[in-house]
Image (cartoon, rainbow, N blue to C red; front, side):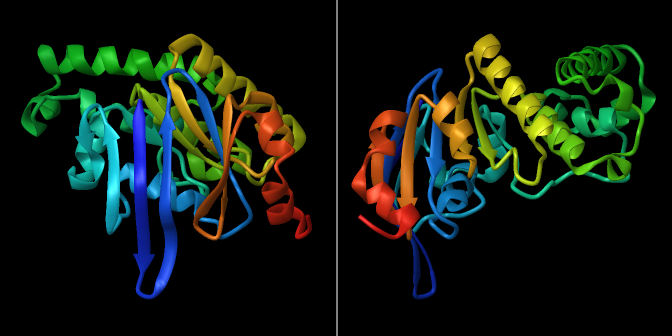
Length: 251
């Protein structure tokens, strides 16, 4: 699905990623873990085009993402959520979900303003997809509520819905459970597993909750100070001395 090949990323004299390589396979959940500042989010920023590495390749569908404009990356089937909620708080839940459908609405601004014929048909089709996502994520009761007035955990769920509205083949999730209580975490895990099972979407997951990671990830990559120190299935990674040292500071 994706090849992240010997990527280097630095800011000034600070090396953030050093010769990092890994593959993402089709229909798998790949978790990236590591202490704070290990470079996990930087990897997602490189894949989504927010950062441009100084060296290496990120190959997706035969193209090097490093040389593709950020909006083209999104239209090629890659969607992401953010560690901090990135929504339009003054808009309603359904309006935020509809924003994820922007790439599928090809009508001109004039045609959309007239809202007739093909423009109306396109709007109805895309709104149906958004409504299905609301139903899937159990967001129907909050359909018309302004996002800014909703609890943080609900906003994180809406952000997931916005990403799903893009119909991604590769979904990047940056700490989707951060700041949630136990019940909210259980809901998000259930939705992630349902998305993976029903749509066969490949997922890269960054998460600090090791219980969740060990339960749902097919493979795990461990980062420490910008270097990949371990990779494998959950049992292999859990028993790796380098991983234990990185997390506990001892052999």
